[in-house]
Length: 173
Image 1 (tube, rainbow, N blue to C red):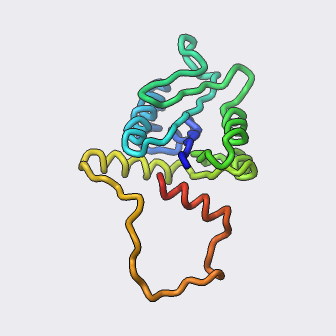
Image 2 (image 1 turned 90 degrees about the vertical axis):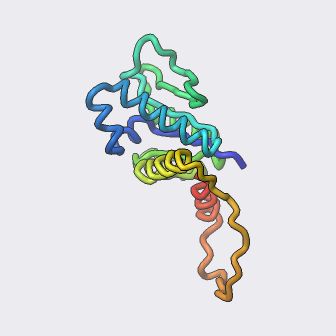
């Protein structure tokens, strides 16, 4: 099942050490750096990615929806926050969505809709690892194969179905 990554743009930028420095200098350079990092990530992982920004800080010449390097960029409309747009998208996509945000309100809403969530710093680590793998020319194997073991794992250690599906999506990142 393909994953649709829905990224809370400003949340990820401000949680990141390197992106927040660019954001403090110029808002547009912070957005551009995030989109560039997401494009490199998409090159490796091939997930559908949408990044959502608040429209109050949007440049007036940019439309509310655009594609840059295969990344869908959405700005919220006037009087609407990016959080509302993300919640609406999570409700529509349900289990196909993976929400990238550290905002508790967005996380709770996404989980109640059936979408998986990942916090911004953890996803940034995944992006950095994908960039590193791209530079080194390494390919990640999604299915490492069966590893023989005598260790028994009964149902008492098994995660709930909801958590298993969530971890399955996170491993694909």
